[in-house]
Image 1 (cartoon, rainbow, N blue to C red):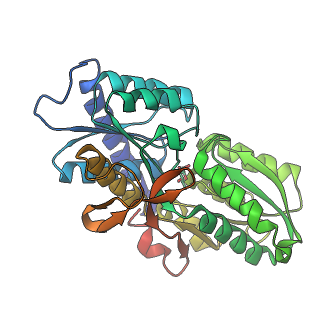
Image 2: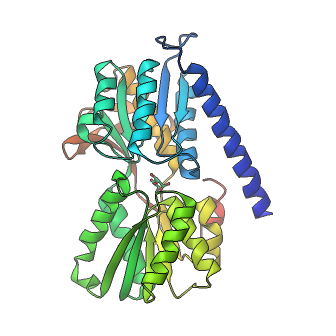
Image 3: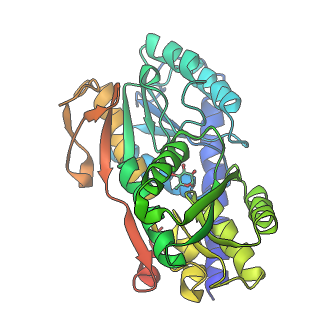
Length: 347
Ligand code: RAM
């Protein structure tokens, strides 16, 4: 029954993506400014296609943009590379969209393209995975990276009894968000209470399902004493959950990280993953939609102290983020056997 539901869900998501792409291509090449019906056009560019988390985030963005009476353009390249995103940004610049919200595949490589967009009056923001402060007006952050990194180390430590080898299965090696979280994991591991935990490797599955599966298998082969895997990516954790299940490694190799409840429910219910964390990806996209609108109508410019109302999420404020600024969604949320049944239906 669950498989059937997930089957229908995937078909629905594929159709939504196709609908989004055809909507996008109908604007492509027109090169005119503004849309013909006078609606403003707001683009979002995710890391790559085939990631249900990205689809949820784009859904939330679309909901916000349409509630505001504008047009949403949803885009994602086939591969999670900066080059592919640069090409999409160039296309959006020539279409003279009003705003570009980017989930960066690289912190720095998109700078020339995004600066060109801003020089032409396009309002640029990042969400989920930031671009550097010079490439954006503001970043929409799901949660504090310090907390995201720390909770994952606390979790794996508890699961393996504070002792043994662990590995990280990440997304791409250039992903700003995963790299920030891994840096915080390494900081947390410096605490003497984690002195018996050894981080043996950070592997990269590139947010591609097959590569994440083979990277997990390689970790298990190279480190036969491995006690735990942290996958701070929804694609990675689901792939690792499948490998550990197929190889019967429940209780031998523990798993935590950041997972989509709908994809991870079976592994949490079976005990392959005791618990994991995430935030609401729909809300991240929705908040970015309202932030983009506030930039376009100049309610905010992206400076510290700017405030705006983000629909159902209420009032939000722009705060500091290193040499740039950001808008925070909330805290990471814990999913375990007690609440997964409820959340797997939501996202
Ligand atoms: C993957 C993506 C995304 C990240 C989540 C946790 O879906 O890498 O950017 O925020 O995992």
